[in-house]
Image (tube, rainbow, N blue to C red; front, side, top):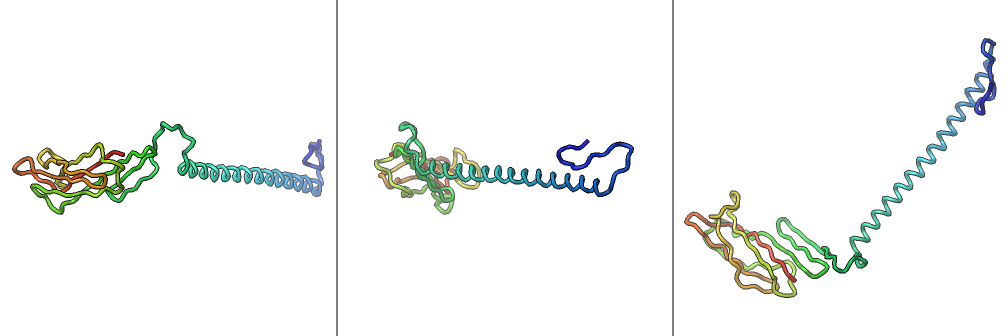
Length: 180
């Protein structure tokens, strides 16, 4: 009995000729190579499709990062951001701005003041400004100091660190400002 891949069939218990056996092996090897070639072609098509999809997805992500105009107008999202070390800002679609950083006075002091220049100007005076005094040599404790807010403009804020105990003092003011 033969099948579609082998040219010769053999009867059990009879002698087979070497050239017929070899012809069957050659036919099988050829069929295996054909199947392997088709498999490799299909595998390459799949790999190309996967690569095209990945490149396409990456393109959509890039476009989405750059153009979200078709989103719900009530959805606010970051349109610009920057950071350098502990200093940073975020600007939102609505115009809302958040920014902050760390001012270093150079050494632990009982009292000190500084004027911080905002990284990007607010349209109006910020609605929320916070500051935390910190010694920088341990965790923040209540004896480090307090921060008072002084003069505020849309581009600057004056910050004052004050000792609140005899052993208190701070080196850093960690600040944050928010508004339009």
